Image (cartoon, rainbow, N blue to C red):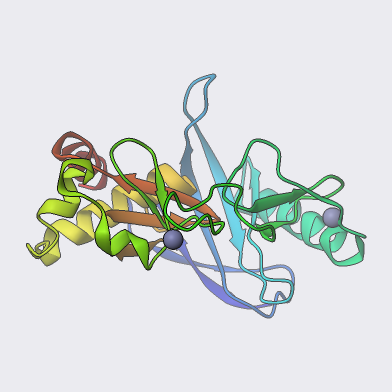
Length: 212
Ligand SMILES: [Zn+2]
Ligand SMILES: [Zn+2]
């Protein structure tokens, strides 16, 4: 049992006393937004970030208690499962267990560097060719993504913060979801094994709108 931060959209944050002793970082919200093809809906959610195996669990329910219960049951299954991983439609090496909700970056990427042929998920040019870290330094100017051209312009800190929140909503369903910001060749956000690339000003504006 531990007290964790409970995020409430539009309302002050509060604390939630967990029912189970998780032993690693968890976060929860009373009204997260889930983006789905059938339409967006609101739900209570409970997210857990186990270290061993390293993965991400998201439970949902009508209440935070229900969401925690859902997450806990998933975690019990993950721990005793003989995982059999499959790629589904992912090419980046991310895999999902056929039997439980365990997922992680477990495979080599299927995409290969167009210069050296090494499997890579590092970056692409504007023609969707892949490049490893080393060869991404020599992408011809005409093939560079818009963001590669002004990569030396620093992104203002406030803009970055707002974009990060927008990305968190997109990738985790929650403004407070844990998202990693990357600014190597393009701006990208990572969460739960997903990657969101920001290639142009339109995408950037959209994310800022969402994060505000
Ligand atoms: Zn499994
Ligand atoms: Zn290469």
